[in-house]
Image (cartoon, rainbow, N blue to C red; front, side):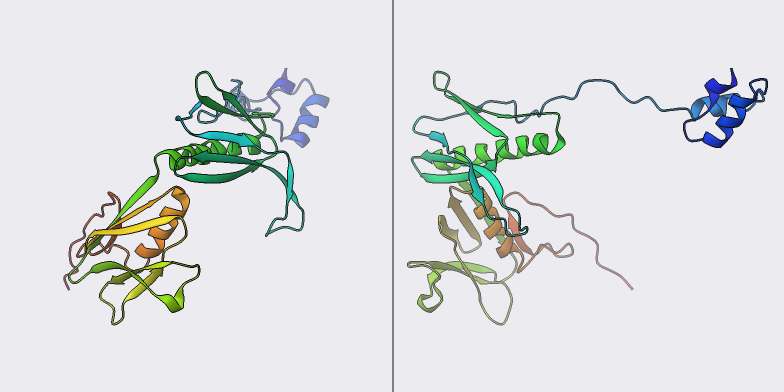
Amino acid sequence: MASKFVPAKGKALGHVLCKHSSVALPGFLVPAWQTSAQRHFSTTTTRRSKLGRTPISVPPGVELSMSDLKTHKAATSYKPTVKKTITVKGPLGSLELDVPAFVALQQDLDNKTALLSVEDANIKHQKEMWGTSWSYLSNYVMGVSEGHTAILRLVGVGYRASVERRGAKEQYPGQKFLCLKLGFTHPVEEGIPQGVTVTTPSPTRILLEGTDREVIMSFAGRVRKWRPPEPYKGKGVFINDQTIKLKQKKIK
């Protein structure tokens, strides 16, 4: 009877109790040995990705197509990776999304929906990339049909913004620059990436528009990096409806 209370890790003591079956544990030690026995984890089945199993609505005028397997050279590894490319075409442009080889795309033309699936949803890596690929594809579909926007708010005395040309600094033909006055001794100039349209409805408001949400928010983050919102006066560059909790001034 004593062997049933032997913990999984107490091998040395387990051999002693098994050899001497007449040896019994004291009553006050029995509960401790019972609790240290092998733990029983949940036996419920793993659930599929909530995002991945959700169909993506395809608006009119948007077309999806998946290419065959292609070998890509990874920048961080000497091993080549095999991926598929999903091409999303719409009224506002075209975008390409690289997905792993185990991701498959199914389209329902009657209901105008698209569904992503993976080979084995029980594998952790495939389950993670399932939802990630769904999120990127959903943003691409919305980008080529409606477009993405972001608003930057300049809060501070003398903060101004304008869109101008800088011929000598252009990285591609026709590139424009966002010129900012943020309290420095010199104006700040940020080159506008391709596919992003920047306008200034007012000197302290900047409107970003484009099809690729990742490019838009990356550019907005670079602009905010010049003047991150500070918690004492509430000055800085704010993205969309971002807020900050103000602190009291330090009193010596």
